[in-house]
Amino acid sequence: MNYSVCASSVYRGQPLKHSLPLLKAAGATAYEFWLWWEEDQKELKALQDSLGLQLVSVCSRFAPMNVPERQKEFLEGLRETLGFAEELGCPFIIGQAGPQLSDVPRDEQEKRIADTLVKADALLAGSRCTLALEPLNTQIDHKGYFLDKAGDAFRLVRAAGSPRVRVLYDIYHQFITEGAPLTDLLDNLDLVCHVHLAGHPGRHEPWLENRIRADEYLDALEQPSYTGYVGLEYMPKDPDRAQAELARFLKGRRA
Image: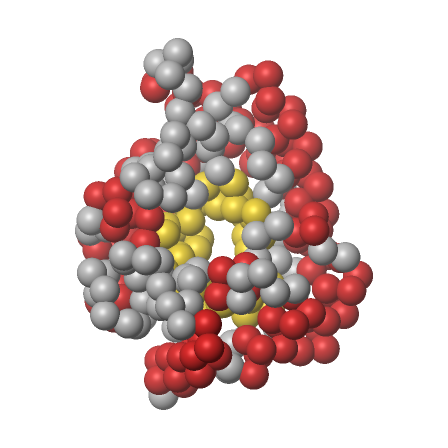
């Protein structure tokens, strides 16, 4: 299994120049973070290359896909993100659908998102990057967000009909939303480019005691048809033990 560590959550509040050496020391070979526009591109490229780390994902600039008046803003943000991702060898760009619009029927909002995905696909053509559409839970972390169910995300990606548009399946978010049935993930694995994992409740380390049986998902993903990463996007329960806990997990899963 390939693991990446989300520096923005595991080392929350620390600059990448501090957190990347730490996750490397813990045994990580890949990382991800959220807000690329807060970083100096050349400095980060030099740092990741010196550490021998692979950047797996970053977020695109935040603009909704389901608001026609802001579609151009989303696509321009994706274009900027693509330039950054290509320079740093990052394969996945995380895109979010936008807020639930109370005055617009749901099917109309889906049509708008589908249209945006088609235009995003054209923008990504010829690149080495994939747009990862992410459903999020609306009960705890992202109230008011439009896309909360994996099935809806899979349907939208199928409609886009491009290998450059796929789904980021976050086990933590989908467990809260609908129990994250393992069949949902495995039956649609061809549409999944990246997986995120954290425990529930608390969004802490997935290997600590919690309601999500992380080993079941990880064992199921140990198959030839999934060649991507599992991103560890959790908030450490005990920051003082975070480094040792991460190192122990990575060593154990690779043993």
